[in-house]
Length: 188
Image (cartoon, helix red, strand yellow):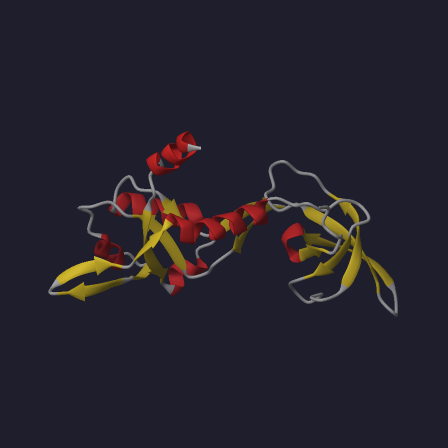
């Protein structure tokens, strides 16, 4: 028990600076561009962009878990305010106290659920015959059944073929897996 507590206390807990993206930054489809800009102006720090990019049929797609913000590892001695000079970034969240800049820092434990959400966007847990509900797009709230999951190791969000029985017709439609909620009861 005490060895477990020691290992937890030895883990480094990071703090993160919150940076609001400009409209240009929000429309940037490749998170690596944002990370690259931070590395050029700030240096070697971790950058968490809460989104997933994938390539599908020659097109790049980005799924955002939280739009409009990025989180940059806090290190003493770095002036994060320089990011506001880059067109991709709008505001570094901070306050001024007694003439000194105090960054609004976020703990790792606050970002961990967001990281888990981003990971969930990357992994699909759908199989043939699973009941689903469409959660985005023009088919939102329609119910259907998984007909086929197209496996592609290079794609973070695989395509799933869904059988939908409408009153007027029966159709097969392909969706990104992130557009679907699995209605199969979870095993305990």
